Amino acid sequence: CNKNLGAEDYLKISESSYFIIIENIPKFNDIKLSITENHAATVILVSGGYPESYEKGKTITGLNDISNELIFHAGTIKKDNTFITNGGRVLAVTSTAKDFKKALKTSYSKIDKINFDRMNYRNDIGFDLL
Image (cartoon, rainbow, N blue to C red; front, side):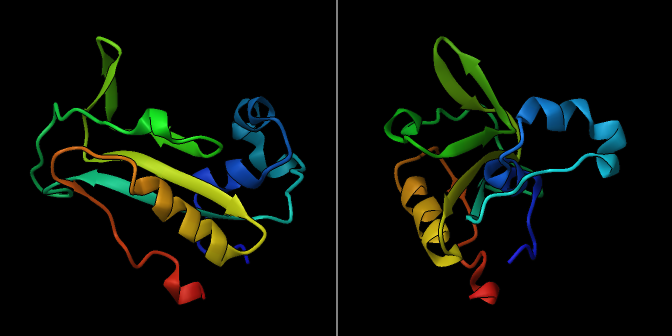
């Protein structure tokens, strides 16, 4: 099911090179992408208060405890070898699996390892597709 896929999902299930995708963004409709049979699920981690007023500068922990999954950094900066929040939409945790339910479960299990003060995320993502 390709309903509601974001860029993170497409990049994770694409067998095409990321560089080819990015290089061809201006003529994206003219390139042929090869997509795996896997399903992708992305959950966005946001700063407390987002989308209204939110604080920056919160230390992010647990990223080193995650392997084999793609974590997209959006509102982060790296300071003294530590990632710090620097925006409302902080991280996008993307997982893939043979079925959507397992991909979603894996994304949420990875999120359990990540922490920053006032971290929020929706826990109902994708359930309309199940």
